[in-house]
Amino acid sequence: MVFYCVNEGKSMNVRNSITPQGEKLTNMQLRNQWNNIDWIKVEKHVNRLQVRITKAVKEGKWYLVKSLQYLLTHSYYAKLLATRKPTQNKGKRTAGIDGETWSSPEAKMKAALKLTDKKYVAKPLKRVYIEKHGSTKKRPLGIPTMYDRAMQSLYALALEPIAEATGDMRSFGFRKFRSTHDACQQVFNCLCRENSPKWVLEGDIKGCFDNISHQWLIDNIPMDESILKQFLNAGYVFDRHLFQTEAGTPQGGIISPILANHYVSYCTSSILSVTFNTLDRQVGLLCFAHLMGRFSPGSSYSAILLSL
Image (cartoon, rainbow, N blue to C red; front, side):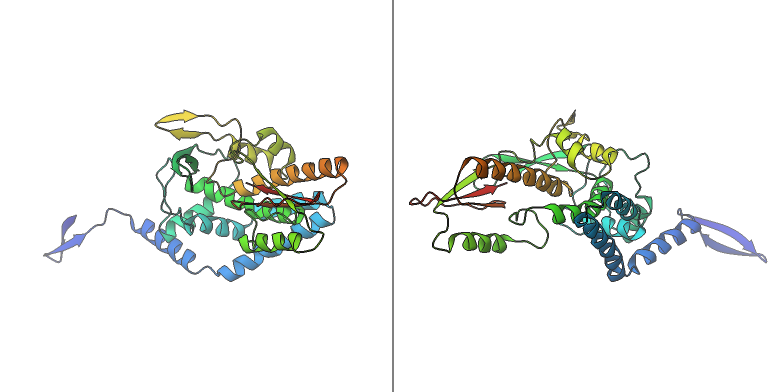
């Protein structure tokens, strides 16, 4: 837009932008603030709190665990890290039902500053169906909004140390710093000796993410109950219709694998307690995701492989 004004009898062209000058400066400041973040310092600060949570869990000081979790979820550095995670993974260009993608530095910085649990209400997930490997069936996938992904990432930072400290050492599915190679190594360790199990039983939890009891998660997951309920009861939108979620955790949620691992650890401990109390045999247990177990006859010993 061009305006004409007079300066000492001479006409001058004055260009006026639609965006106010103050807003320009704000966006520039936000952009510079995000681009100048020292991520090594941020990660060290968050990791230091996570180490303190792990230490408190191992010492059984659950009152201290709760306090440290609150400190972490309200930390400025943790909010920066939680905002960065959903903008760096494979689904960073996939929007939720609100159509937002935080593609610019200023948008990420604004989101980090607005991230809070006060009056938090999770929006419904966008339901899509993707091809299931090795099958003609399709797997349901829930896509949260970017804000909900950041909130899940924030609370996952506080929940992950507890999951790792209390999780089964023989569990490898969706575990940090664990891979398929580690699961294969554990299989070898179980089967390489002369008195190793000869029977291998594979079990598959059908629809693991879809059928976990919400009430069990609320009663057993050590995190803010009100926030957890928002994650679980957000519902989903498919074909322009809103559906409620009465069970399960959404596949596609950042915090879902941690919640599922808590439940699987409970299941495996129950299996072992029943097995050891009823059978006088050597039993090994291994939990993993998408790995095939083999059956080999010839002994009364057995190994149980549980897949997600």
